[in-house]
Image 1 (cartoon, helix red, strand yellow):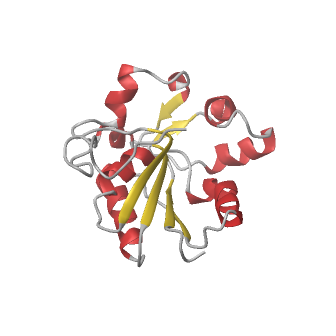
Image 2 (image 1 turned 60 degrees about the horizontal axis):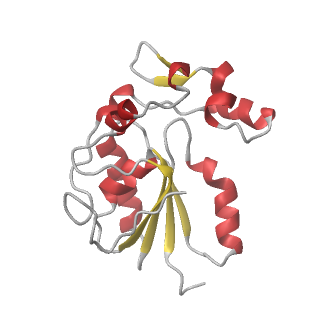
Length: 182
């Protein structure tokens, strides 16, 4: 297992590190012995990228950053550390410098956008009764219910936070990274 890189998993909006549970088990079964899942605060892209960088800095050796959904923007922003050897985007935003998840969403609005509800404190929730159909259609209803009740809402302003400096400059083309989407 020592010859494999450390994998750091970065969640998206409305979820947390525990949403990677099945992926963690699968990676472990495939011989990845060093696995971490970041618990981002979802208060701003900079806060989330800094939390991810702090975790990566604790790792000796190569790191693969894996981001889901908004986590793709986070790994793009945090992927500039010298021990980060790859970025993997799992159904994720892969913004370039100056782009934000909100801008990308405006260009191609998600089907469930009408199921989002801001609260009076500026957090953006998925309506609980719409969570299963909006976020996790492939899960059993009981699991979706738990996820709906325990969802981790982002500050709505986070959608507008732009990526500042993706690894390799303003464009990742021709860098040591390969954009992979699933």
